[in-house]
Length: 183
Image (cartoon, rainbow, N blue to C red; front, side, top):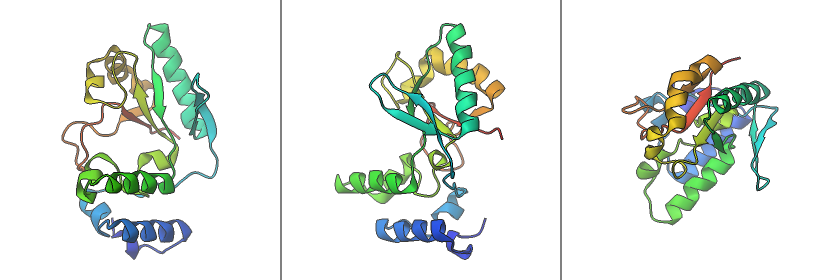
């Protein structure tokens, strides 16, 4: 993979470049960590609506696969909760700005958060999954029945754990982050 800026700059890449410069993200970070550009889809559907009314968006294919996965888990008494789904590159940049405002360094932030343009959430295929057995987005999710069910069954629905322990991308272990890899 070539450095991000060696690619022809379309509108999306130009936007990502400006964000990198603004936030002080090294231009070569995606290449150094083996990250792939994740473009935002042109169409999203509501993948799920929480009881409080919050809507989560996914691509149509990812939403269909999520519904099948969630139903199969429920048939075995496992409740899967959608915690996060589509997130734009601009929203990702806002999260980083807030963390920088709280005194975190860009290096600290980029161990737990992808740089804008390189988050699987931008693709509309990634889902952060929770369980009523533990707080959201914590490593303790790996000790839940939900995680064990996902580890044994998610592949049937074309979902994969993106960031296992000691992953090559330099991210912390995220047992809650699953990405749809189907068409």
